[in-house]
Length: 268
Ligand SMILES: [Mg+2]
Image 1 (cartoon, rainbow, N blue to C red):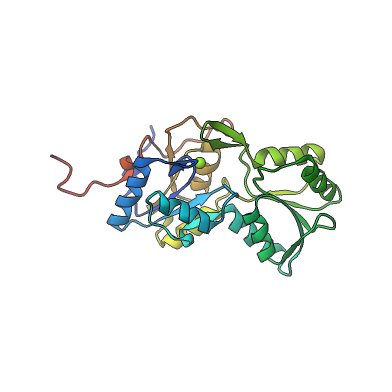
Image 2: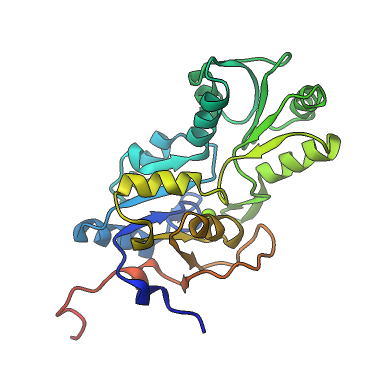
């Protein structure tokens, strides 16, 4: 018998996925927006973690603010920032990088001390790129054939789109691995717990007192559990990104089900 997550104590901090939880594409999920408003009122701190590498933390903060969630860029943890942190750790003096990805990713790689280069790269960085071409794959493959390691922002094979799902970075990783099976590929985003650990440190609450909310078992739920948080599946939609044997600590159809009702307001 599963122990219900709420029997393990109140929720003192919230770490949440973005796409598929706060919004779907450009459409805010109204009940989620309302839940974050109430958490703010109640003084329950929250932060967001996303595998999406197409926008910077500031751009995500602007998007959420437009949708009615009070948030600053410090509360957003992206795979762009996590990848840049990893680059700085492994190449403290910078180097040359070949990037498949959108502008915010290239900018973060440059900020980490790298020159963007098609040849002689020390590292290939893979992120979401809606202008992916054969030429980009060819340049990356040539580098990897020469022994250049790969840092990939996230493993998701699919990403939600307003009218279905689009291919994501997992597909690009698969292409490179198919061409070069011995490639060294480091995958940064969820299900690695790194961003969630950073987020919960910002919230300043103990890990068992915080929850991780996500719509994907294979990334959000596993990452939350690895980080030592209770992981809640927001199941408004069928999970994708492959089958998973992971069991979430709770399943809700609305984030409002997670918001504590003030004493005295329970009955009407
Ligand atoms: Mg999601």
